[in-house]
Length: 196
Ligand SMILES: [Zn+2]
Image (cartoon, rainbow, N blue to C red; front, side, top):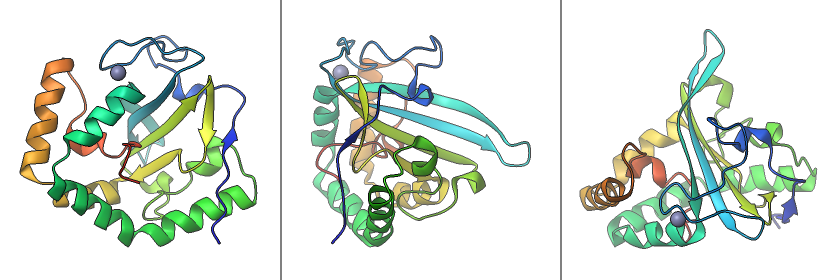
């Protein structure tokens, strides 16, 4: 049996702060809804890493209220949804092994959770690009199925299975609500409801 608990951290690790303000996000990047102590929302960061120099920079980041996350999940075409779920299923053993280990040993620190790709197990220090997403509830980061960290290796796999319709649908949504923003390939790395 895979052990999955729901553990609330004390507050939100500074890693998930808004890079510009140095403080936690206060509103949804997509609809401007206020994020307060009662909100449930997701934060995602895409990070570029120079392995040789051991330096990192944020490509983009956003906070996503639960309403917007649900809307985005429903914008996926059925073909894409199936393809993504199939891809996740292929990697579910790694996913479950990692979750089981982290919960069983009660390693509730971001450092432990970000060591390896949630899907492929690839070491994050060896990635030139990776994304991290987490869920906040009641002002605290939740350790449950997430935080999820996705390696460049898995990103490539995912990009190959997404349908043209899905990419276009998300691009349209993106154009509507953001000036410069993540693309569909990036959005589905986050904890989109109904996918994991
Ligand atoms: Zn929103």
